[in-house]
Amino acid sequence: MNDQQKLEQGLSQVASLFATCTPDKQRQISDLLDLYRAEKDALAAVIQAVDAADICRKCAGQCCQNGKFRLTVCDALALHVKQMLLSSDFNQKPLCPYGTERGCCLSPRFRPMDCILFVCDEIEARLTESDRFELSEREARIRKYLQRLSQLAGTPLSTPLLLWSGSKRRS
Image 1 (cartoon, rainbow, N blue to C red):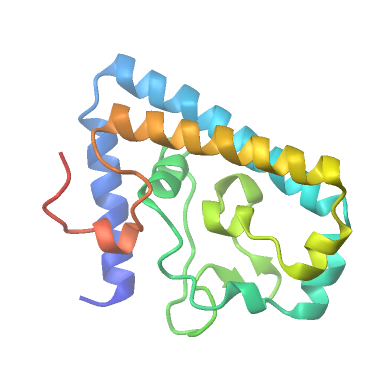
Image 2: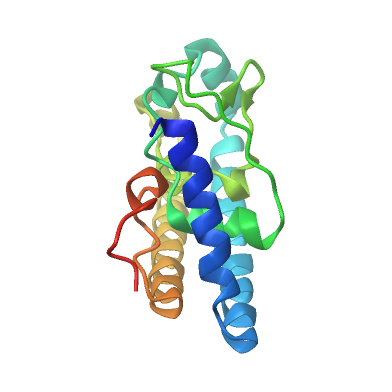
């Protein structure tokens, strides 16, 4: 099975996972995903405020190398709940399959956590102590939401989707 097939299988399994949850559990998951996405947006805003777009444009995505395993089950669930489609191109190795000529095909709220949390040295140098503290606090909240979401779903949602797809380990 190639990576595109694994992705499609994983997305289908995520849809099934959510569909088997009770309506109350679906609501709880949706509510937590709203908080999870809001924290990701806020985290991305801190980075954008230091003109990261300029740095990233000049760098041309060195941090976006080999990104096929960054999309997690939680990321796929967040996309599913909001009925967002995912565009991918696994033929553009070593670049991330979710990257395009214009950058990531996903808005910050739907990007993998690794992508949102990564701060290169050049961006790090522009952050204030207050920025670093805020990033740390938001990361801790994101991780708590992820842990709670995993408990509700009955499976480790931090697992890369391509590794989770087809596995027998799900509850």
